[in-house]
Length: 340
Image (tube, rainbow, N blue to C red):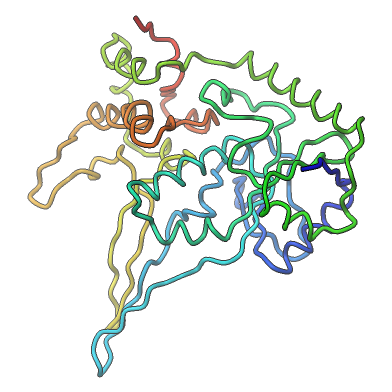
């Protein structure tokens, strides 16, 4: 498909058209945190962020959601499945988060068994990615296979070329979204295309300076678990779970029932293998009683089990997990280990 361009001054015009038929989510600041939030009518998306604090996965896989409700009636128990899916556009998704969605797509349809809540939202969502002008500190997306200039899984890709964006339409869903913009879009000039290529080359060159060794991820994970550094790492772990909650690919969850006044609801919320009660059984036995076993599971899941089962490494190089309160950086540790 042809490359297009849209002036930054006309972006709001396009967003308004998108909002006529879909909920539009874009980077915003909420309570001091940068996250993807639903744009109110007339609100400006804040696309200048290097990356959001919270991952984009929250739009399609919320931190907390109601799955079913029930109510006792004279005719018996009435159970109702909750469907909150709606036509949605995610604007300004960074390539790392888009790659994270590819991972979730496979995880939530593994073995042909679909998670209906995620799949319904995903099917109704159009992803408009934004190429990063510069990498955030610590980003190493290309080291784990992220296509930083045209991420797989995006429907439209925007590249900043100064006063405009060069627009790559990747599929029919993206074409439909761009079509709503009408005259806001024009055919990209040769100068636009050159500027977009140069922006991509600059980004990749800067990312190369932050690259880490992540080839042979399974071998690296096993070598790290046998290394002298391993005890120093797991010995610091607080089992707080922040690494999982901020990760674009982590998808563990818990389900609980809440009852009140003859009815109730079933709630799903984020959980993590880092939690000390994640594997605690009804009889009190815990298969992973210490941070050592739990962190071992996290490492093997991301760098061994996920590639084997899903065909993708469980890391997108976004560096959000480096916000660990005790400075555990698993990717840097794995990148530094010697692999025979």
